[in-house]
Image (tube, rainbow, N blue to C red; front, side, top):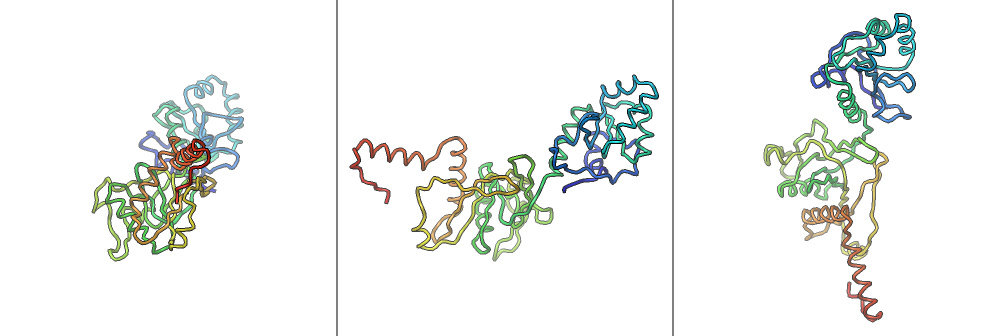
Length: 320
């Protein structure tokens, strides 16, 4: 189960959220983790006793609520609060820490942070941050590229020329995200984000040339730090028999499931004389058209059937 420490959350967001550590430093290694029954976005929220958040945020309304109580009522409320499972308490809006809260956090080893930012902004930042760092992930092997603003993963057996194809696509103005190993994170119910492992960033290995620094050769615009995966292009070695057996008018859409997200998949035969870079660009352009509701194969079949009907059935199929 993905999790992060309060210490890391603090370090990663200290500057942006103007955070300061007020109490509970002994709980710096408390873990914030994904609950199978709760979405990541529900990990952070305003003070909640019914559905407790792992990160409890105290804003203007909550501070007023606590400050209006008598000392006995505050103690009873904090006893109830600290019986809940939580990893962190943040007092936002540059407000003074409510009475007794600092002592409770210190005693229960619950980190207490203060922030100078407003609570709605703080929660938005932390929700997006946690959604990324706690996302389910996997590693796929291939080359991940940005082609016409579409994230594509090129897969296939070793030796089919994936890296050479990627190099040609980069030289045509497209962007490289990752070569060889691609880290895929599920950042939404139907969204996968591809990133490059830090060790491999900027590099592309091409047989005969070795490891190339794409950023140094082609410039900053040739590299993308991350991209949403929308299309998988699987290269397969094809002989004449395979090419003849292909159904040229197939309108079925293949998909591949990654982290329970269905991704559109295309199988592209590799054969002598085929310009793979042009074919990949055409496949991506066609995918973009399909996203806009235009399907070339369906249009052709519709035109073909219309001509058959107009000709009374005497029109001969000339596809071959």
